[in-house]
Length: 419
Length: 153
Image 1 (tube, each protein chain N blue to C red):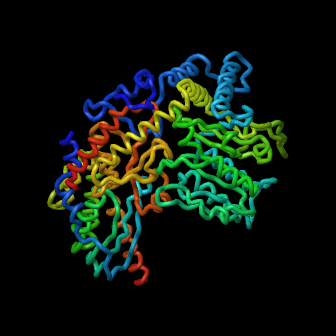
Image 2: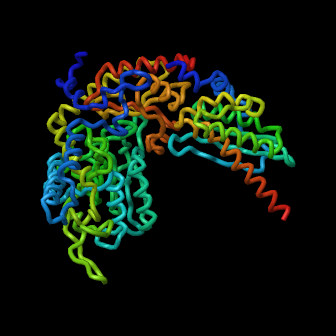
Image 3: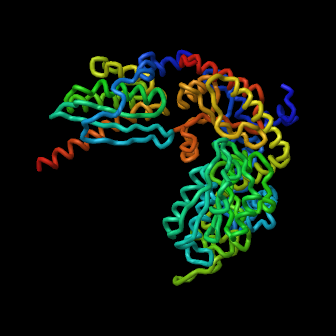
């Protein structure tokens, strides 16, 4: 299939992902279209993690032996790799968490703690209506803890941020602006640096959820203009159990610690403690070591393929999928309809068939999609739908997998006798 | 593949899905509950009206997949007109069927159209769809019974 913009080495890339070889549903080839939920893992990530466990396993930063040194080097090497992946000015600004949710909770929680950045009554937190629950609930909790007010940017009918009243929403009371780079439900790519610049004009901290952006487009934390950027390992062909918080050094320095424990201290007496400098200040306890090492291999893999090329591939597949979905009668795509303004997750509705039932039929054809509210209930409510079906592609997705999806959707319509 | 699907989507289920029985919210009622399935977003608002020890009416508004919609229809049709004890016994049978992982042989005399859900028990992800409204009914009925006990006390 010769679509302009696909990764030229697509067939080689697919061979890097062993799971794509397996069959499901009684011998059918797996068509994995749920990568926005979690991505599949290339052999190099699997091998790197196995090698670490087989040959280098030890706790980090405290074991005074050869394995301890190797493990520490591998873990801190992963931090270097992630820093490079994000174009972070300093490796110390890269904090390992267990996932993106924990990274967002770290920021939202510590902004409630006593300190120079603590929020209070009269302050405002601005989010958007297209956020994943993980970028809504922590801010609601921050508002409850501090008496600050939560406000949000609404959405236009075509699934973009409605910035018409941004001048009023953003004001001298706004202390935090948190938004997603790419929507996990609508697919919309938001104008990150423009929004960040507007937020900085009123002196607000800018928190960007890059969970869907980091897998599929170049993320440059400096160019983004954000104070914090978070993403999760398992969506960037890395393992679960590891996430990343990048933050500006001066902001991270000004925040009090999140969790207390080993590794995050300078000294401890029974009465009080002093804290380690960043990044360790925010990494209490033994971290997910092998997961971090796996993530390092994952971002190296993506960088070797090239994030620009991956982005082009995603947009090519997305364009092809939007055309394919438009050919299925009674099917409506939520969010922008042009591939240029969106990422590789496409949520849609099919008249007369519930998303659960669609996903069930697709599953019997070997096609994996997600059905439900995709942890974005407010965004669904905005469009008057309770749930949707979502297909999401990645660097290993082939056009013939989209063909299989379209065929299976037509079969679904026939099975449920709609249209 | 179609056989696997057909074991889940029995004709009876699709019929109830397309033409649900007892749908809509009605008066009178003594208790109303709202249950959601947090993972998928399916929801049901359900009212129970008891007359003495009889289930006089079950009315509902629900949104969800074919399995949850059909199950609500079948449940309402089964319990309306029964005594609360009889209905609770049917509830227990349906629960046992759903939690049996496909090993429980359903009794058609008790479950009537509910036996069509035997296939659902083999799809663990869908069991909660089938049980949503049954749990809502039990919850609402328990509320009415608790209120009645309070009034008598």
